[in-house]
Length: 471
Image (cartoon, one colour):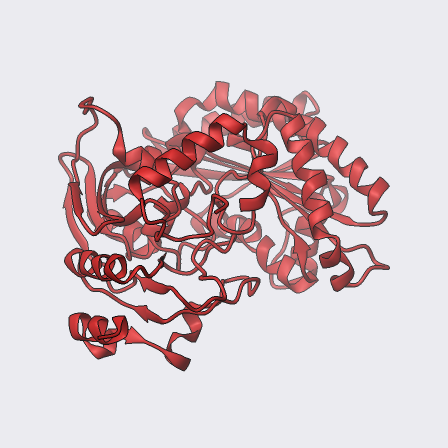
């Protein structure tokens, strides 16, 4: 009997998709990778996931796990061989439990991130992971890449928000590790091993996540700045002045936000005149546990002194929720503006915060020497050193001309990242996009240890092959 027939008998024919029904699962969000598969399966429980894995092992068929299919590095797209099974976890979307005394929630991997946020809020709690794709990405995908987002500065990456996991191993066993413990030193931390592994070691089917009290008050401000150096100094002062209440600090190149308001006229910068044409903008958010008045007072003290000292050209403080949302909408519209502008070579990098300004200056200059006239789209999470450093074609260059040089651009930018002690992947993962670049930046020992782990946990090499590590 073929594996397709066995899968249909196990899951039901309606949950085994082939042909046109499978097509949406075989292309990535950016339309960069197009794969092929024997079928797409849609299990509805952990036991069904385990059963599918066992069938794949029995038939020696590779398996590609997929959540919301929002990967930016091709991590959830099969190759073109057509020999694999794609496993979509979107049906596993239940919030299993919320424990407000322990400040935890246990959720299935297919839960959309926004649903977690809403369920937590309904229980009077905050789940702080926040991404531009939160309306479609799933917590399983967030776990697989150790996603970051806009509040890492205060709450950490997805790994920091996770207490326990339920995982189906590469051999079809179920690890029941859904512990809501903040202290558990009983051997190797398997949880942290699976988080960030992009489905290459096993399939995360559920997780126990941390919750936090809802803030009493929030304040949002957008700052107009002369330089990236000034932004870093303001960040330092904000950390000292706000402490743990500083939940977000985003930085955006002036030309980037100016492109947003040009392409989307319904949006407006909260500045006029010279300030609206600033070289850089910052967006920061304060979450206060005392009162709105206390938050406002702290904001005015820290930002007022920064303005007096000439670090901030102008500051707009949101007076209500609508204004706060409008500011964040400007930031979140940058990827949409990029799509309107056209294809770009995208980088998701992390740099020590103290070196970010020098990195941008040096890398911009090197790109102009090798590719004169290219445009720099720089924005990201300054508070944790994560930049989205993207390169757009020069005015006299076609999109295809840029794409023909994309690997040269990658090499130049990533070499610069490495020289500044950074990482070529901060929160988007490795997938297939950066797989072949890892050997250039990881030591031989690091790669050897990673390969040993892969061989130990996935001895047949069937879990998401071709991702993260070279064959």
